[in-house]
Image (cartoon, rainbow, N blue to C red; front, side, top):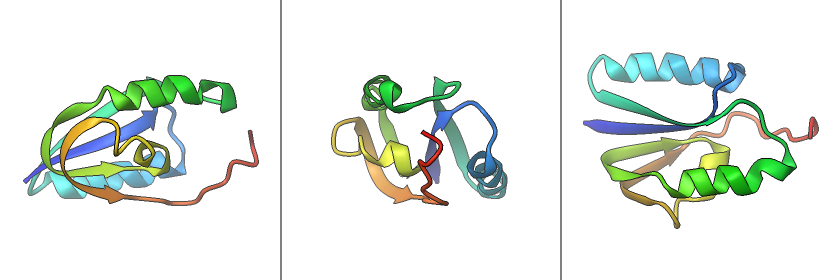
Length: 95
């Protein structure tokens, strides 16, 4: 199975750590391609840039795995395949 895993941040947080564990487990039996839009950090002013980068993602995979932020562009990007959203904990109180 071909899996595309879309990430937004480069920094390692709890979500990223759990994601690495899941990617490792999935990669034992499937091909997992990690697509990172390359944000070091973000705040409310960076959402247009994040949105723009996420909309440029394209390709065909059996399954696309997305976090909370990457789900917003699902109707607008050029990806083909099924989608899975992984939402760990939505806490934007730090912004």
